[in-house]
Amino acid sequence: MSTKYIFITGGVVSSLGKGIVSASLASILESRGLNITMLKLDPYINVDPGTMSPFQHGEVFVTNDGAETDLDLGHYERFIRIQLGKENNFTAGRVYKNVIERERLGKYLGDTVQVIPHITNEIKRLTHIGAKGADVTLVEIGGTAGDIESLPFMEAIRQMSLELGRDNVLFIHLTLLPYIKVVGELKTKPTQHSVKELRGIGIQPDILICRSEYPMSDIERAKIALFTNVSQDSVFTSLDVDTIYKVPRALHEQGLDNVVVKKLSLNCNPTDLCEWDNVIKRLQHPKSSVDIAMVGKYIDLTESYKSLSEALIHASIHTQTKVNIHYFDSEKIEENGTDCLSEMSAILVPGGFGNRGVEGKIATVKFARENNVPYLGICLGMQVAVIECARNMANMINANSTEFNKKTAYPVIHLITKWKDVDGYKHSLNKDSYLGGTMRLGGQKCVLVEGTNSQEIYSKSVIIERHRHRYEVNNLLIKQLEVAGLIVSGRSIDGTLIEMIEIRDHPWFVACQFHPEFTSNPRDGHPLFESFIKASNKANNLILF
Image (cartoon, rainbow, N blue to C red; front, side, top):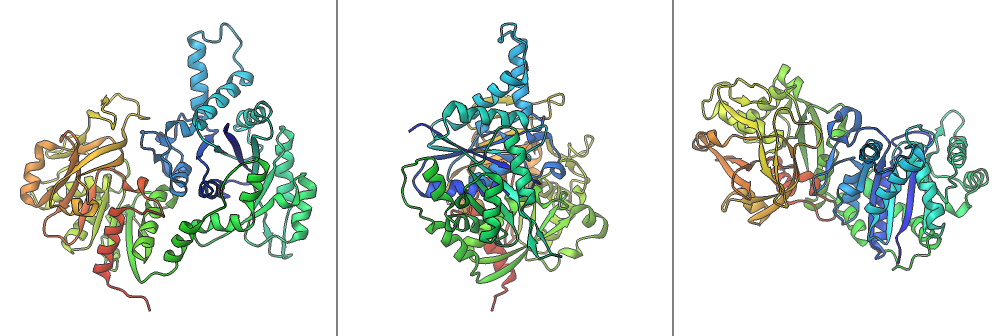
């Protein structure tokens, strides 16, 4: 059958959970045997989120093919079993860049280039490319109804509904249903106004999903239906839950997927959410508890570490361990020392850029190594582990990364200049390269060394994990580090780049240059995080009663 499209828009305010609702609906439809894909369309002018501050936009999610994308693609990959890529996320910046480049080449044959039809046509073209081969494509539009930035995207999807026919297109609108405590009522007016805004640009939603702290009464549902021209059986609620992995079951029990299947005339199987029920069952019945210190520099916005915190939750599911994540600012550790870490079961140092708080991370590594605390370092977390080993085990005084000190006498971490991607293509980088899209990105093969903890964890000789970085371990100094007690447990497929390290005579000390959190999901988990939590459990040995 031809591809059916579900366009998901948001209104009233941002951060309503549009990505979670979209991913949850996708997971339900996938459980019914449909071939699903998902797209995120972002209205900001950045070509991609790669150069945006985590404080502004949260985590940058990296796909296997090396795209730096919106964090919602992480939700998509965690909820549906599909690897997304460069075609599944595009921004207004990318759209305008494509159109301007085409205009410069004379491809428009002298036309006056305008938002309509040229920008909207490019949005539609990219959407069709991303949707190719799917039975159903869910397309989430970033921003909220009424934003000036999102108007070309709204116009494009309005046009698609006319071109494809209403049997092949469905509009879902997510709004806020606030509870006013003083009067004890849910207020429907924001939803009414949001739908009015949407209808003003030519889009009549077929389904409404109202985010709320409290259940909606039949009276409130009828009122919303009347004022928005949406049938009453197509008005749903998205209630707050203690874990996002309950959302698929919650939406299914309201009948959302049945309405979608009926409106799009889909021929599919009955819903089967057994896997999701098992996820919730294991999550809610832990047998032990651990306290994990996550020492980072973006802790004021925990969304910066979204995939990482979710990967720890996935490990908690598969080890039946209650994982309590404690966020520590590495700058404060730099100022006040590591005493704050003394009651933690294990320590995780994530990735990051720039030298702010780096000395606090190095002190954290020293604390974990000297006190036999399980340690997991990711990306920069591996680099600071190498620096700490160089300084305090190999007697390389003031060893550092050239990212932080270009004149260091012991540049144990330095700028990568050449590498191959997962398809074997050669890439190069220098100090004058653009910041955006020039890192070592995406899935890369890693060969694990026989007999190491890393190889035992993965139970494989070759793995593929995703990268996002510019700096690598300096091979010219690695021999001195190995003599001092550092173990290289993983290298790139050609042997030129160090991917994983361990520390000799430590109960559990593993660090990796890649980002394993990008390939973890709640149903399958990830071996590295599961091993980390098991080691944390062994170190903590706190049993719940």
